[in-house]
Image 1 (tube, rainbow, N blue to C red):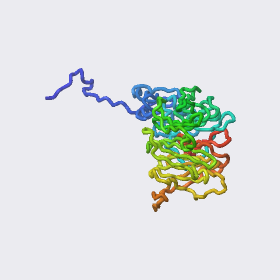
Image 2 (cartoon, rainbow, N blue to C red):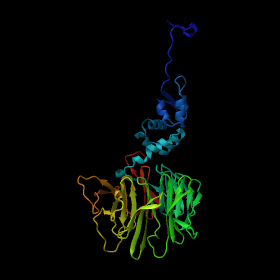
Image 3 (cartoon, helix red, strand yellow):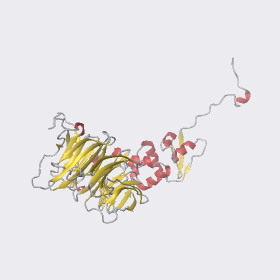
Image 4 (tube, helix red, strand yellow):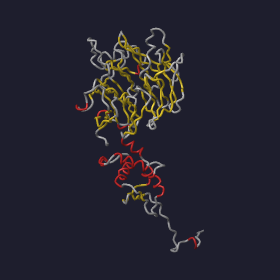
Length: 470
């Protein structure tokens, strides 16, 4: 049976009309210039952005929405939405103009991902690109960075902050005579401590105020100073030493609430127990092993001695410990990517590594140099700094910086301890004009950049890949 439509339901020509689907093309009038893109591209800006709202309201039956902004800057940001990167011609524009414009449209996060993404860090193509000047006559004592490259620099009693684009945000005055330890909790908050001032302070860097002070007390209820600070994704770690230097401990706090979670490595010193008298002066989390590396050393009449401990922070037990007596470390670091620990011998100045996959080996260190031993009594490794970043290790010697990387070789030899030998090679970093000079005092990484300070210099060197944008 054939069903027919009522005459009132039929159009005048007698045929049913099919409505055209809504167009996927969005047209925007920016400063008098028309731009066309897809609605899907605009939604990449995020649900709370202006561009996403424009996408929701755009219609082929309505005039294009008008935005009273610079069309040239908008064209750069539209390319950013389409490809995830700024076009090369964006280099001719002022970066701050692009930042302000991205903030207006609500897409600054995309701009940060494009220009300061940690995944874009290229160790082999780093060059010194600029310096960050600091007010006053004090040299930087410590640098703290966020994952996407915001920088906090302690110099004297002051802390100067720079945003991810390295624009100076603020300089605040602290209660410390000099800051010895600092960790960036966020772009606005830092955990700060000193070896001559009691307590770990959580400082609001925007308003210049102390939000909270975290303290540790020993059995005698004496005050304590901060020797080192570290963190994981969940926890904040702080190494404390009592004011009388007769006890030390590592406190673990929840990184979000700053409430105490656990205490590990609490030592009360009796007599001449020098090993337990060593507070941890460097803390580094190893996420692949869920362990905290804590190291400390002491210089005495018989030379430099120290210890390195790997802590299970949940149980409070030491998983691995190395007592350093012969050619103790001047500095030490650990690389989760390489599953190895690295040190600079204080006497020889040589680089050593220990494989974390061979925990418990009696003699874990393998020398990467020529195994020379100094007989003149001069400590070649004093003042050297060593840090790992990704799958590379950076080592400063005087004013020069070495880059060490693991290389694969065809033949597999065994080391003296019986484990499979690993091969590392070094490269001297930078152009000739960038290196040499004063001794390197600090080395850290943030975003796609490396930050470095030198003795008696009142600025921070910024190193980045010269092939990338700004």
